[in-house]
Length: 567
Ligand SMILES: Nc1ncnc2c1ncn2[C@@H]1O[C@H](COP(=O)(O)OP(=O)(O)OP(=O)(O)O)[C@@H](O)[C@H]1O
Image 1: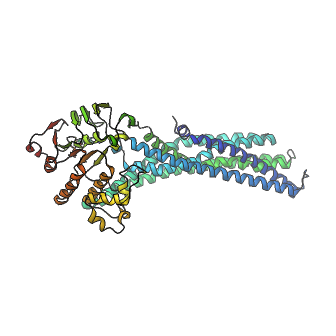
Image 2: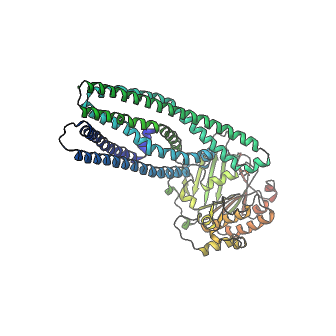
Image 3: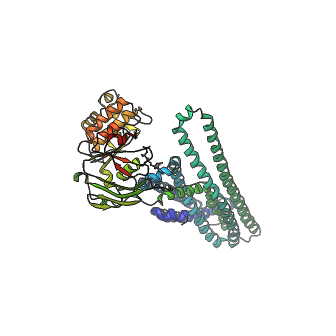
Protein backbone atom coordinates (compact mmCIF):
# COMPACT_ATOMS: atom_id res chain seq x y z
CA UNK A 1 0.00 0.00 0.00
CA UNK A 2 1.14 3.50 -0.78
CA UNK A 3 2.69 5.29 2.25
CA UNK A 4 0.27 8.25 2.14
CA UNK A 5 -2.75 5.94 1.98
CA UNK A 6 -1.37 3.90 4.85
CA UNK A 7 -0.75 7.00 6.96
CA UNK A 8 -4.37 8.00 6.51
CA UNK A 9 -5.54 4.49 7.38
CA UNK A 10 -3.28 4.01 10.43
CA UNK A 11 -3.79 7.47 11.92
CA UNK A 12 -7.54 7.35 12.15
CA UNK A 13 -7.70 11.04 13.16
CA UNK A 14 -6.13 11.93 9.78
CA UNK A 15 -9.51 11.42 8.10
CA UNK A 16 -10.99 13.92 10.53
CA UNK A 17 -8.12 16.35 9.83
CA UNK A 18 -8.73 16.04 6.08
CA UNK A 19 -12.47 16.65 6.49
CA UNK A 20 -11.85 19.58 8.85
CA UNK A 21 -9.22 21.17 6.59
CA UNK A 22 -11.59 20.68 3.66
CA UNK A 23 -14.48 22.44 5.47
CA UNK A 24 -12.24 25.30 6.60
CA UNK A 25 -10.78 25.51 3.08
CA UNK A 26 -14.27 25.95 1.61
CA UNK A 27 -15.11 28.69 4.16
CA UNK A 28 -11.76 30.38 3.54
CA UNK A 29 -12.26 30.24 -0.26
CA UNK A 30 -15.74 31.75 0.00
CA UNK A 31 -14.47 34.60 2.18
CA UNK A 32 -11.67 35.09 -0.33
CA UNK A 33 -14.21 35.44 -3.17
CA UNK A 34 -16.24 37.92 -1.17
CA UNK A 35 -13.12 39.82 -0.18
CA UNK A 36 -12.05 40.16 -3.84
CA UNK A 37 -15.55 41.21 -4.84
CA UNK A 38 -15.86 43.86 -2.11
CA UNK A 39 -12.36 45.15 -2.84
CA UNK A 40 -13.23 45.54 -6.55
CA UNK A 41 -16.50 47.32 -5.71
CA UNK A 42 -14.77 49.59 -3.18
CA UNK A 43 -12.01 50.57 -5.62
CA UNK A 44 -14.64 51.13 -8.30
CA UNK A 45 -16.61 53.55 -6.10
CA UNK A 46 -13.55 55.29 -4.73
CA UNK A 47 -11.53 55.90 -7.87
CA UNK A 48 -13.84 55.43 -10.83
CA UNK A 49 -17.12 56.52 -9.24
CA UNK A 50 -18.80 53.34 -10.48
CA UNK A 51 -22.42 53.59 -9.33
CA UNK A 52 -23.29 50.98 -6.72
CA UNK A 53 -26.27 49.79 -4.71
CA UNK A 54 -24.70 50.83 -1.40
CA UNK A 55 -22.28 53.36 0.02
CA UNK A 56 -18.53 53.27 0.53
CA UNK A 57 -18.61 52.68 4.30
CA UNK A 58 -20.85 49.63 4.11
CA UNK A 59 -18.57 48.11 1.47
CA UNK A 60 -15.51 48.92 3.61
CA UNK A 61 -17.16 47.20 6.61
CA UNK A 62 -18.04 44.14 4.50
CA UNK A 63 -14.48 44.06 3.21
CA UNK A 64 -13.10 44.21 6.77
CA UNK A 65 -15.42 41.37 7.90
CA UNK A 66 -14.46 39.07 5.02
CA UNK A 67 -10.80 39.89 5.58
CA UNK A 68 -11.14 39.03 9.28
CA UNK A 69 -13.12 35.86 8.55
CA UNK A 70 -10.47 34.64 6.12
CA UNK A 71 -7.69 35.29 8.65
CA UNK A 72 -9.65 33.43 11.35
CA UNK A 73 -10.30 30.42 9.07
CA UNK A 74 -6.61 30.33 8.11
CA UNK A 75 -5.47 30.56 11.76
CA UNK A 76 -7.93 27.88 12.95
CA UNK A 77 -6.89 25.57 10.12
CA UNK A 78 -3.16 26.03 10.93
CA UNK A 79 -3.74 25.61 14.66
CA UNK A 80 -5.83 22.46 14.33
CA UNK A 81 -3.37 20.87 11.91
CA UNK A 82 -0.46 21.66 14.25
CA UNK A 83 -2.36 20.24 17.23
CA UNK A 84 -3.37 17.12 15.37
CA UNK A 85 0.23 16.59 14.18
CA UNK A 86 1.62 17.04 17.72
CA UNK A 87 -0.83 14.42 19.06
CA UNK A 88 -0.09 12.09 16.15
CA UNK A 89 3.61 12.49 16.91
CA UNK A 90 3.09 11.30 20.49
CA UNK A 91 0.94 8.36 19.33
CA UNK A 92 3.46 7.29 16.71
CA UNK A 93 6.36 7.45 19.18
CA UNK A 94 4.54 5.41 21.82
CA UNK A 95 3.37 2.86 19.21
CA UNK A 96 6.94 2.66 17.91
CA UNK A 97 8.29 2.13 21.43
CA UNK A 98 5.78 -0.58 22.34
CA UNK A 99 6.49 -2.32 19.04
CA UNK A 100 10.20 -2.28 19.88
CA UNK A 101 9.45 -3.90 23.26
CA UNK A 102 7.62 -6.74 21.51
CA UNK A 103 10.52 -7.68 19.25
CA UNK A 104 13.00 -10.37 20.17
CA UNK A 105 16.50 -9.20 21.17
CA UNK A 106 17.90 -11.03 18.13
CA UNK A 107 15.94 -8.73 15.82
CA UNK A 108 16.83 -5.63 17.82
CA UNK A 109 20.52 -6.55 17.83
CA UNK A 110 20.37 -6.70 14.02
CA UNK A 111 19.03 -3.14 13.84
CA UNK A 112 21.46 -0.28 14.16
CA UNK A 113 20.92 1.85 17.26
CA UNK A 114 21.72 5.06 15.40
CA UNK A 115 19.16 4.26 12.70
CA UNK A 116 16.54 3.47 15.31
CA UNK A 117 17.11 6.71 17.20
CA UNK A 118 17.14 8.80 14.01
CA UNK A 119 13.81 7.26 13.00
CA UNK A 120 12.30 7.83 16.45
CA UNK A 121 13.56 11.41 16.79
CA UNK A 122 14.20 13.07 13.39
CA UNK A 123 11.84 10.75 11.50
CA UNK A 124 8.87 11.47 13.74
CA UNK A 125 9.64 15.22 13.62
CA UNK A 126 9.66 15.03 9.80
CA UNK A 127 6.36 13.24 9.89
CA UNK A 128 4.95 15.99 12.09
CA UNK A 129 5.94 18.57 9.45
CA UNK A 130 4.26 16.43 6.82
CA UNK A 131 1.04 16.20 8.82
CA UNK A 132 0.98 19.79 10.06
CA UNK A 133 2.03 21.52 6.84
CA UNK A 134 2.25 19.39 3.73
CA UNK A 135 -0.99 17.43 4.08
CA UNK A 136 -3.29 20.45 4.79
CA UNK A 137 -1.49 22.43 2.08
CA UNK A 138 -2.02 19.68 -0.48
CA UNK A 139 -5.76 19.73 0.30
CA UNK A 140 -5.87 23.53 -0.11
CA UNK A 141 -3.86 23.28 -3.32
CA UNK A 142 -6.72 21.30 -4.88
CA UNK A 143 -9.71 22.83 -3.13
CA UNK A 144 -9.06 26.59 -3.34
CA UNK A 145 -8.26 26.70 -7.10
CA UNK A 146 -11.39 24.62 -7.86
CA UNK A 147 -13.69 26.92 -5.82
CA UNK A 148 -12.11 30.05 -7.33
CA UNK A 149 -12.32 28.62 -10.83
CA UNK A 150 -16.06 27.97 -10.50
CA UNK A 151 -16.58 31.59 -9.38
CA UNK A 152 -14.30 33.03 -12.07
CA UNK A 153 -16.17 30.98 -14.70
CA UNK A 154 -19.35 32.78 -13.67
CA UNK A 155 -17.67 36.19 -14.02
CA UNK A 156 -15.52 35.70 -17.09
CA UNK A 157 -15.21 32.40 -18.97
CA UNK A 158 -12.14 33.50 -20.97
CA UNK A 159 -10.08 34.00 -17.79
CA UNK A 160 -11.34 30.65 -16.50
CA UNK A 161 -10.16 28.92 -19.68
CA UNK A 162 -6.73 30.56 -19.41
CA UNK A 163 -6.41 29.31 -15.81
CA UNK A 164 -7.57 25.81 -16.80
CA UNK A 165 -4.80 25.71 -19.42
CA UNK A 166 -2.04 26.94 -17.07
CA UNK A 167 -2.83 24.93 -13.92
CA UNK A 168 -2.47 21.42 -15.43
CA UNK A 169 0.93 22.41 -16.85
CA UNK A 170 2.06 23.21 -13.29
CA UNK A 171 0.60 19.95 -11.98
CA UNK A 172 2.28 18.00 -14.79
CA UNK A 173 5.70 19.48 -13.97
CA UNK A 174 5.15 18.91 -10.26
CA UNK A 175 4.38 15.21 -10.85
CA UNK A 176 7.46 14.92 -13.03
CA UNK A 177 9.68 16.53 -10.40
CA UNK A 178 8.01 14.58 -7.59
CA UNK A 179 8.94 11.27 -9.21
CA UNK A 180 12.62 12.20 -9.32
CA UNK A 181 12.58 13.84 -5.89
CA UNK A 182 11.09 10.78 -4.20
CA UNK A 183 14.14 8.57 -4.70
CA UNK A 184 16.51 11.46 -3.86
CA UNK A 185 14.64 12.10 -0.57
CA UNK A 186 14.84 8.39 0.30
CA UNK A 187 18.55 8.37 -0.39
CA UNK A 188 19.04 11.45 1.79
CA UNK A 189 17.08 9.82 4.60
CA UNK A 190 19.21 6.64 4.49
CA UNK A 191 22.45 8.65 4.42
CA UNK A 192 21.23 10.56 7.50
CA UNK A 193 20.48 7.28 9.30
CA UNK A 194 23.93 5.99 8.38
CA UNK A 195 25.54 9.17 9.66
CA UNK A 196 23.71 8.88 12.99
CA UNK A 197 24.71 5.23 13.38
CA UNK A 198 28.36 6.01 12.73
CA UNK A 199 28.31 8.95 15.13
CA UNK A 200 26.81 6.84 17.87
CA UNK A 201 29.26 4.02 17.30
CA UNK A 202 32.19 6.43 17.48
CA UNK A 203 30.96 7.99 20.69
CA UNK A 204 30.51 4.55 22.23
CA UNK A 205 33.92 3.39 21.08
CA UNK A 206 35.66 6.71 21.76
CA UNK A 207 38.00 5.24 24.37
CA UNK A 208 39.02 2.31 22.16
CA UNK A 209 39.63 4.66 19.19
CA UNK A 210 41.81 6.86 21.41
CA UNK A 211 43.80 3.91 22.71
CA UNK A 212 44.35 2.55 19.19
CA UNK A 213 45.24 6.11 18.01
CA UNK A 214 42.50 5.86 15.38
CA UNK A 215 40.94 9.29 15.80
CA UNK A 216 42.10 10.38 12.31
CA UNK A 217 40.43 7.35 10.71
CA UNK A 218 37.24 8.11 12.63
CA UNK A 219 37.28 11.72 11.45
CA UNK A 220 37.84 10.58 7.86
CA UNK A 221 34.90 8.16 7.95
CA UNK A 222 32.64 10.80 9.47
CA UNK A 223 33.67 13.44 6.97
CA UNK A 224 33.01 10.96 4.10
CA UNK A 225 29.49 10.23 5.32
CA UNK A 226 28.95 13.89 6.20
CA UNK A 227 29.89 14.76 2.63
CA UNK A 228 27.50 12.13 1.25
CA UNK A 229 24.80 13.70 3.41
CA UNK A 230 25.67 17.16 2.06
CA UNK A 231 25.48 15.92 -1.55
CA UNK A 232 22.15 14.17 -0.92
CA UNK A 233 20.73 17.27 0.83
CA UNK A 234 21.88 19.54 -2.00
CA UNK A 235 20.22 17.23 -4.55
CA UNK A 236 16.90 17.41 -2.70
CA UNK A 237 17.22 21.17 -2.31
CA UNK A 238 18.04 21.53 -6.00
CA UNK A 239 14.82 19.71 -6.85
CA UNK A 240 12.94 21.84 -4.31
CA UNK A 241 14.35 25.05 -5.87
CA UNK A 242 13.61 23.78 -9.37
CA UNK A 243 10.02 22.97 -8.44
CA UNK A 244 9.65 26.43 -6.85
CA UNK A 245 11.04 28.01 -10.04
CA UNK A 246 8.65 26.05 -12.29
CA UNK A 247 5.73 27.01 -10.09
CA UNK A 248 6.64 30.69 -9.98
CA UNK A 249 7.22 30.78 -13.72
CA UNK A 250 3.91 29.26 -14.71
CA UNK A 251 2.00 31.11 -12.00
CA UNK A 252 3.43 34.43 -13.26
CA UNK A 253 2.74 33.53 -16.90
CA UNK A 254 -0.80 32.46 -16.02
CA UNK A 255 -1.46 35.69 -14.09
CA UNK A 256 0.03 37.78 -16.91
CA UNK A 257 -2.13 36.02 -19.54
CA UNK A 258 -5.29 36.62 -17.54
CA UNK A 259 -4.34 40.27 -16.85
CA UNK A 260 -3.63 40.86 -20.54
CA UNK A 261 -6.91 39.31 -21.65
CA UNK A 262 -8.83 41.34 -19.05
CA UNK A 263 -7.02 44.59 -19.91
CA UNK A 264 -7.68 44.29 -23.64
CA UNK A 265 -11.38 43.66 -23.10
CA UNK A 266 -11.61 46.52 -20.59
CA UNK A 267 -10.09 48.92 -23.13
CA UNK A 268 -12.64 47.80 -25.71
CA UNK A 269 -15.39 48.05 -23.10
CA UNK A 270 -16.27 44.39 -23.57
CA UNK A 271 -16.15 43.74 -19.82
CA UNK A 272 -17.40 45.67 -16.79
CA UNK A 273 -14.83 47.05 -14.33
CA UNK A 274 -15.97 45.25 -11.15
CA UNK A 275 -15.94 41.64 -12.45
CA UNK A 276 -12.68 42.33 -14.31
CA UNK A 277 -10.93 43.59 -11.16
CA UNK A 278 -12.44 40.75 -9.08
CA UNK A 279 -10.99 38.19 -11.50
CA UNK A 280 -7.64 40.00 -11.53
CA UNK A 281 -7.50 39.98 -7.73
CA UNK A 282 -8.44 36.30 -7.58
CA UNK A 283 -5.93 35.11 -10.18
CA UNK A 284 -2.81 35.25 -7.90
CA UNK A 285 -4.92 33.66 -5.15
CA UNK A 286 -5.72 30.83 -7.58
CA UNK A 287 -2.01 30.01 -7.84
CA UNK A 288 -1.09 30.85 -4.25
CA UNK A 289 -1.98 27.43 -2.61
CA UNK A 290 -0.13 25.56 -5.38
CA UNK A 291 2.94 27.78 -4.84
CA UNK A 292 2.71 27.24 -1.07
CA UNK A 293 2.59 23.49 -1.68
CA UNK A 294 5.81 23.83 -3.65
CA UNK A 295 7.56 25.34 -0.64
CA UNK A 296 6.34 22.43 1.54
CA UNK A 297 7.44 19.90 -1.06
CA UNK A 298 10.69 19.16 0.76
CA UNK A 299 8.92 18.67 4.12
CA UNK A 300 6.42 16.35 2.45
CA UNK A 301 9.04 14.11 0.87
CA UNK A 302 11.11 13.90 4.05
CA UNK A 303 8.01 13.03 6.07
CA UNK A 304 7.04 10.21 3.71
CA UNK A 305 10.57 8.77 3.65
CA UNK A 306 10.56 8.73 7.47
CA UNK A 307 7.06 7.18 7.54
CA UNK A 308 8.35 4.29 5.46
CA UNK A 309 11.09 3.57 8.04
CA UNK A 310 8.54 3.73 10.85
CA UNK A 311 6.21 1.35 9.06
CA UNK A 312 9.05 -1.14 8.55
CA UNK A 313 9.22 -1.55 12.33
CA UNK A 314 5.42 -1.56 12.71
CA UNK A 315 5.28 -4.45 10.22
CA UNK A 316 7.57 -6.69 12.27
CA UNK A 317 5.46 -9.57 13.66
CA UNK A 318 4.55 -9.39 17.33
CA UNK A 319 6.51 -12.00 19.25
CA UNK A 320 4.74 -11.77 22.58
CA UNK A 321 2.30 -14.55 23.40
CA UNK A 322 -0.99 -14.12 25.15
CA UNK A 323 -0.36 -13.49 28.85
CA UNK A 324 -3.00 -16.07 29.77
CA UNK A 325 -0.87 -18.85 28.28
CA UNK A 326 1.21 -18.81 31.47
CA UNK A 327 -1.16 -19.47 34.35
CA UNK A 328 1.31 -18.53 37.08
CA UNK A 329 1.71 -15.48 39.21
CA UNK A 330 4.28 -14.57 41.83
CA UNK A 331 1.79 -15.52 44.52
CA UNK A 332 1.70 -19.14 43.23
CA UNK A 333 5.48 -19.46 43.63
CA UNK A 334 7.48 -21.00 40.82
CA UNK A 335 6.44 -24.46 39.56
CA UNK A 336 8.80 -26.95 37.95
CA UNK A 337 10.02 -26.06 34.46
CA UNK A 338 10.70 -28.78 31.92
CA UNK A 339 12.56 -28.37 28.63
CA UNK A 340 12.22 -31.39 26.29
CA UNK A 341 14.22 -31.63 23.06
CA UNK A 342 14.62 -27.88 22.93
CA UNK A 343 16.47 -26.59 19.88
CA UNK A 344 17.49 -23.06 19.15
CA UNK A 345 19.25 -21.51 16.22
CA UNK A 346 19.82 -17.83 15.54
CA UNK A 347 18.30 -16.63 12.25
CA UNK A 348 20.83 -16.86 9.45
CA UNK A 349 23.08 -19.28 11.37
CA UNK A 350 23.75 -22.69 9.82
CA UNK A 351 23.85 -24.78 13.00
CA UNK A 352 21.72 -25.00 16.13
CA UNK A 353 23.19 -23.14 19.11
CA UNK A 354 21.25 -25.48 21.39
CA UNK A 355 20.54 -28.92 19.98
CA UNK A 356 18.04 -31.30 21.53
CA UNK A 357 18.40 -29.90 25.01
CA UNK A 358 16.59 -31.50 27.97
CA UNK A 359 16.34 -30.10 31.48
CA UNK A 360 13.94 -30.19 34.41
CA UNK A 361 14.23 -27.44 36.99
CA UNK A 362 12.59 -28.16 40.32
CA UNK A 363 11.22 -25.29 42.47
CA UNK A 364 13.93 -23.63 44.58
CA UNK A 365 16.63 -25.69 42.92
CA UNK A 366 19.97 -23.96 42.33
CA UNK A 367 21.70 -24.95 39.10
CA UNK A 368 25.02 -23.83 37.66
CA UNK A 369 25.52 -23.93 33.88
CA UNK A 370 29.14 -24.26 32.85
CA UNK A 371 30.81 -24.87 29.50
CA UNK A 372 33.22 -23.44 26.97
CA UNK A 373 32.76 -19.98 25.55
CA UNK A 374 30.13 -19.80 22.81
CA UNK A 375 28.40 -23.11 23.71
CA UNK A 376 25.06 -21.37 24.31
CA UNK A 377 24.89 -20.69 28.07
CA UNK A 378 23.59 -17.12 27.69
CA UNK A 379 21.20 -18.32 24.98
CA UNK A 380 19.75 -20.82 27.45
CA UNK A 381 19.19 -18.04 30.01
CA UNK A 382 17.47 -15.96 27.32
CA UNK A 383 15.12 -18.88 26.59
CA UNK A 384 14.38 -19.20 30.28
CA UNK A 385 13.77 -15.48 30.71
CA UNK A 386 11.44 -15.44 27.70
CA UNK A 387 13.55 -13.00 25.70
CA UNK A 388 14.05 -15.72 23.06
CA UNK A 389 11.69 -18.48 21.91
CA UNK A 390 12.90 -21.99 21.02
CA UNK A 391 13.01 -23.04 17.37
CA UNK A 392 11.62 -26.49 18.33
CA UNK A 393 10.86 -28.62 21.39
CA UNK A 394 8.46 -28.58 24.30
CA UNK A 395 8.38 -26.28 27.31
CA UNK A 396 6.22 -27.23 30.28
CA UNK A 397 5.55 -24.98 33.24
CA UNK A 398 3.91 -26.79 36.17
CA UNK A 399 2.97 -29.62 33.79
CA UNK A 400 1.24 -27.26 31.34
CA UNK A 401 2.75 -27.10 27.88
CA UNK A 402 3.54 -23.63 26.58
CA UNK A 403 4.88 -22.61 23.21
CA UNK A 404 7.35 -20.05 24.54
CA UNK A 405 8.08 -18.13 27.71
CA UNK A 406 7.98 -14.80 25.82
CA UNK A 407 5.12 -13.42 27.87
CA UNK A 408 4.82 -10.40 30.19
CA UNK A 409 3.29 -12.69 32.86
CA UNK A 410 6.34 -14.92 32.80
CA UNK A 411 8.76 -12.00 32.93
CA UNK A 412 7.22 -10.90 36.23
CA UNK A 413 8.43 -14.20 37.68
CA UNK A 414 11.99 -13.69 36.50
CA UNK A 415 14.95 -11.53 37.48
CA UNK A 416 17.95 -11.59 35.15
CA UNK A 417 21.28 -10.29 36.38
CA UNK A 418 24.02 -10.13 33.78
CA UNK A 419 27.71 -9.25 33.71
CA UNK A 420 27.29 -5.52 33.20
CA UNK A 421 23.89 -4.36 34.44
CA UNK A 422 22.57 -1.23 32.81
CA UNK A 423 22.45 1.87 34.98
CA UNK A 424 19.95 4.37 33.60
CA UNK A 425 20.69 8.05 33.77
CA UNK A 426 18.59 9.29 36.69
CA UNK A 427 18.50 9.14 40.47
CA UNK A 428 19.32 6.07 42.55
CA UNK A 429 15.66 5.97 43.50
CA UNK A 430 14.61 5.82 39.81
CA UNK A 431 17.16 3.11 39.14
CA UNK A 432 15.81 0.97 41.97
CA UNK A 433 12.11 1.56 41.41
CA UNK A 434 12.24 0.44 37.79
CA UNK A 435 12.48 -3.14 39.11
CA UNK A 436 8.92 -3.07 40.42
CA UNK A 437 5.61 -2.72 38.56
CA UNK A 438 4.43 0.84 37.81
CA UNK A 439 2.27 2.28 40.53
CA UNK A 440 3.50 -0.04 43.30
CA UNK A 441 4.42 2.02 46.36
CA UNK A 442 7.78 1.49 48.03
CA UNK A 443 8.98 3.64 50.93
CA UNK A 444 12.48 5.02 51.37
CA UNK A 445 13.01 2.61 54.30
CA UNK A 446 12.57 -0.31 51.95
CA UNK A 447 15.00 1.22 49.47
CA UNK A 448 17.61 1.74 52.22
CA UNK A 449 17.03 -1.86 53.28
CA UNK A 450 17.69 -3.34 49.81
CA UNK A 451 20.77 -1.14 49.40
CA UNK A 452 22.05 -2.54 52.72
CA UNK A 453 21.35 -6.13 51.63
CA UNK A 454 23.28 -5.47 48.42
CA UNK A 455 26.24 -4.24 50.49
CA UNK A 456 25.96 -0.61 49.40
CA UNK A 457 25.55 1.07 52.81
CA UNK A 458 29.04 2.61 53.00
CA UNK A 459 28.93 3.81 49.37
CA UNK A 460 25.43 5.21 49.88
CA UNK A 461 26.51 7.23 52.96
CA UNK A 462 29.18 8.97 50.87
CA UNK A 463 26.62 10.28 48.36
CA UNK A 464 25.69 13.98 48.47
CA UNK A 465 21.93 13.65 47.87
CA UNK A 466 21.08 10.19 49.16
CA UNK A 467 18.45 8.44 47.04
CA UNK A 468 18.16 11.53 44.82
CA UNK A 469 21.81 11.41 43.75
CA UNK A 470 22.02 11.33 39.97
CA UNK A 471 23.92 8.37 38.52
CA UNK A 472 24.59 6.98 35.04
CA UNK A 473 25.15 9.09 31.91
CA UNK A 474 25.65 12.73 32.87
CA UNK A 475 25.58 11.94 36.61
CA UNK A 476 27.93 10.29 39.08
CA UNK A 477 29.68 7.32 37.45
CA UNK A 478 29.43 3.95 39.20
CA UNK A 479 32.06 1.21 39.18
CA UNK A 480 31.38 -2.30 37.84
CA UNK A 481 30.99 -3.67 41.38
CA UNK A 482 28.64 -0.82 42.42
CA UNK A 483 26.53 -1.37 39.29
CA UNK A 484 26.27 -5.09 40.08
CA UNK A 485 25.22 -4.30 43.66
CA UNK A 486 22.57 -1.85 42.41
CA UNK A 487 21.29 -4.71 40.23
CA UNK A 488 21.20 -6.98 43.29
CA UNK A 489 19.25 -4.30 45.21
CA UNK A 490 16.77 -4.18 42.30
CA UNK A 491 16.47 -7.98 42.45
CA UNK A 492 15.62 -7.76 46.18
CA UNK A 493 12.85 -5.28 45.41
CA UNK A 494 11.49 -7.39 42.58
CA UNK A 495 10.83 -10.49 44.71
CA UNK A 496 10.57 -12.75 41.66
CA UNK A 497 10.93 -16.49 42.38
CA UNK A 498 13.25 -17.29 39.43
CA UNK A 499 16.71 -15.77 39.50
CA UNK A 500 18.87 -15.99 36.37
CA UNK A 501 22.49 -14.96 36.80
CA UNK A 502 24.80 -14.55 33.81
CA UNK A 503 28.39 -14.49 35.03
CA UNK A 504 27.57 -12.00 37.77
CA UNK A 505 31.14 -11.71 38.98
CA UNK A 506 32.97 -11.64 35.65
CA UNK A 507 35.14 -8.50 35.12
CA UNK A 508 35.35 -7.91 38.91
CA UNK A 509 38.47 -8.11 41.06
CA UNK A 510 38.62 -11.19 43.35
CA UNK A 511 37.77 -9.24 46.52
CA UNK A 512 34.73 -7.47 44.99
CA UNK A 513 33.68 -10.75 43.32
CA UNK A 514 33.74 -12.50 46.72
CA UNK A 515 31.67 -9.70 48.31
CA UNK A 516 29.13 -9.84 45.47
CA UNK A 517 28.87 -13.62 45.84
CA UNK A 518 28.13 -13.18 49.56
CA UNK A 519 25.38 -10.67 48.72
CA UNK A 520 24.01 -13.11 46.13
CA UNK A 521 23.99 -16.05 48.58
CA UNK A 522 21.37 -14.28 50.68
CA UNK A 523 19.34 -13.33 47.58
CA UNK A 524 19.26 -16.95 46.35
CA UNK A 525 17.54 -18.29 49.49
CA UNK A 526 14.04 -19.69 48.70
CA UNK A 527 14.39 -18.96 44.98
CA UNK A 528 14.97 -21.08 41.92
CA UNK A 529 18.39 -20.06 40.62
CA UNK A 530 20.17 -20.70 37.32
CA UNK A 531 23.67 -19.28 37.25
CA UNK A 532 25.92 -19.24 34.20
CA UNK A 533 29.49 -19.10 35.39
CA UNK A 534 33.11 -19.79 34.58
CA UNK A 535 33.88 -19.69 38.31
CA UNK A 536 34.20 -23.24 39.73
CA UNK A 537 33.88 -21.83 43.28
CA UNK A 538 30.47 -20.33 42.57
CA UNK A 539 29.37 -23.42 40.58
CA UNK A 540 30.31 -25.80 43.41
CA UNK A 541 27.94 -24.00 45.79
CA UNK A 542 24.91 -24.89 43.63
CA UNK A 543 22.74 -28.04 43.94
CA UNK A 544 23.53 -29.19 40.40
CA UNK A 545 26.16 -28.33 37.83
CA UNK A 546 25.32 -28.83 34.18
CA UNK A 547 27.98 -28.85 31.54
CA UNK A 548 27.01 -27.59 28.08
CA UNK A 549 29.08 -28.89 25.20
CA UNK A 550 29.90 -26.91 22.10
CA UNK A 551 26.67 -28.06 20.37
CA UNK A 552 24.59 -27.04 23.36
CA UNK A 553 24.04 -30.64 24.56
CA UNK A 554 23.96 -30.96 28.33
CA UNK A 555 25.61 -33.33 30.74
CA UNK A 556 25.32 -33.37 34.54
CA UNK A 557 28.70 -33.09 36.21
CA UNK A 558 29.46 -35.54 38.98
CA UNK A 559 32.87 -34.24 39.99
CA UNK A 560 34.49 -30.83 40.25
CA UNK A 561 37.13 -31.92 37.73
CA UNK A 562 34.44 -32.30 35.09
CA UNK A 563 33.56 -28.63 35.08
CA UNK A 564 36.88 -27.13 36.06
CA UNK A 565 37.88 -26.95 32.40
CA UNK A 566 35.45 -24.09 32.00
CA UNK A 567 37.97 -21.80 33.73
N1 LIG B 1 22.21 -12.49 18.09
C1 LIG B 1 22.94 -13.51 17.64
N2 LIG B 1 22.93 -13.84 16.34
C2 LIG B 1 23.65 -14.87 15.86
N3 LIG B 1 24.45 -15.64 16.64
C3 LIG B 1 24.51 -15.36 17.95
C4 LIG B 1 23.77 -14.28 18.52
N4 LIG B 1 24.03 -14.24 19.84
C5 LIG B 1 24.90 -15.26 20.09
N5 LIG B 1 25.17 -15.92 18.94
C6 LIG B 1 26.06 -17.08 18.78
O1 LIG B 1 25.52 -18.17 19.52
C7 LIG B 1 26.54 -18.90 20.15
C8 LIG B 1 26.23 -19.01 21.67
O2 LIG B 1 26.28 -17.70 22.23
P1 LIG B 1 26.11 -17.50 23.81
O3 LIG B 1 26.24 -16.06 24.10
O4 LIG B 1 24.88 -18.18 24.25
O5 LIG B 1 27.38 -18.31 24.35
P2 LIG B 1 27.95 -18.42 25.82
O6 LIG B 1 28.12 -19.86 26.07
O7 LIG B 1 27.13 -17.65 26.79
O8 LIG B 1 29.37 -17.72 25.64
P3 LIG B 1 30.30 -16.94 26.73
O9 LIG B 1 30.66 -17.93 27.78
O10 LIG B 1 31.46 -16.51 25.91
O11 LIG B 1 29.48 -15.80 27.23
C9 LIG B 1 27.84 -18.16 19.86
O12 LIG B 1 28.51 -18.84 18.82
C10 LIG B 1 27.40 -16.78 19.41
O13 LIG B 1 28.29 -16.27 18.45
